[in-house]
Length: 93
Ligand SMILES: [Zn+2]
Image: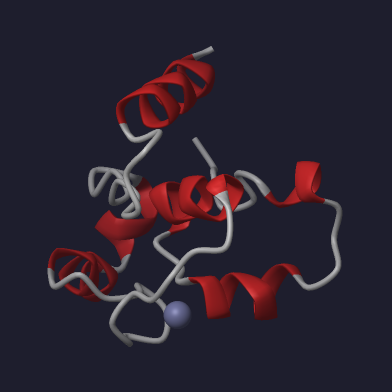
């Protein structure tokens, strides 16, 4: 339920915006690994620490909003998985 609300906010507030919302830094993964949060705050990918590039679609932007992964990291991580299965993989609440 909460997840759906966040999703709705993301899509409605940023529909025509090229840059996605950053992840919620209060999530457990960022508490456990604060260096990831630092990267997000610097506008970088949480995983490879490279500056964020383009995202290919809305799904990728939303995934960034959850995991903080850039497009390239998402591609490596999720590969050829079905899109429906990629969203929220790191969501563990
Ligand atoms: Zn990356």
